[in-house]
Length: 358
Image 1 (cartoon, helix red, strand yellow):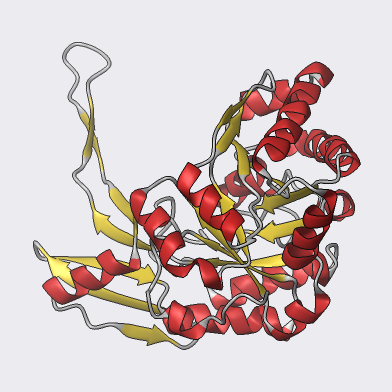
Image 2: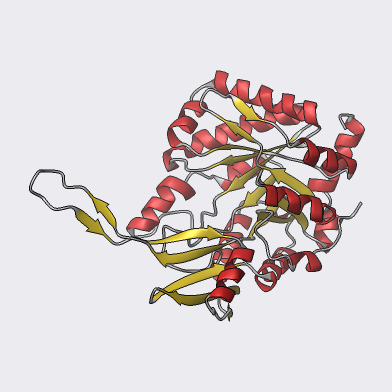
């Protein structure tokens, strides 16, 4: 697994094969350590071109922790399936401290190279989120420095980025927050020059932070794709396709105890949403007589039902929803698509996806 000849082969197969991208977008699937995610990998590994498991984290000191799932790694190696694990950090303060320390970054990069050599990974994917927009240049510098070290070692670096069209905040409070805390840190032009692949996370448009709506509305997806293509070459861009949904419902009111004696508790409404798999969404539709519908404008499946006299909403990804976005990646000639996450999907997508080309 560690020979330079084999490494060159898997890099070409996973990231640099224009002929494959022209016919079939490279199928990148994320995998967690959840048993159902792992079972899905074993069931459908022949239709996965690049496996990106969530095996590693890094802290502010550059300490990389994590390890592979032995059975998954062995199966991937036996199939010559490239593996590029995530290394994640989702904390503003920790990220800022990491970028401020050259020593910590060097420690991180050495660990990433070590893990690749130990386990035969083709490289790593950065999943760095919840970053202040004021750390934009710091993120670019960290990514650039890591790419230099990994490339020198004959390895690859990719990154998952939060979609950030139109490149500036809107007028509302939510628009400001989503920009300052999530979207504003990614300088796509500079990052694209450093990395081998940008995975555009075109999902989570609507979440528990928002009113009900598609996980990845059609025009929102297209707008973010077109915006990214202004800065990222299409052969370096992978389109995010969600495999999950969200379930919105009315939660119990939140009650804040009185601040002073004699005052009454403060009650606030609590509309909320939970992440939901396709299987669980369909189960709720069955149990509560939800009528599954198709949204022509947003190219997505959805339904609602009533429980305790209250309407609950679910938007999720069925085969039709998935296929439309897959074909969008084909239409724009992208490197491929990246789907979060194995174990949550409509099983019908496996009747549509081609086998991996050897």
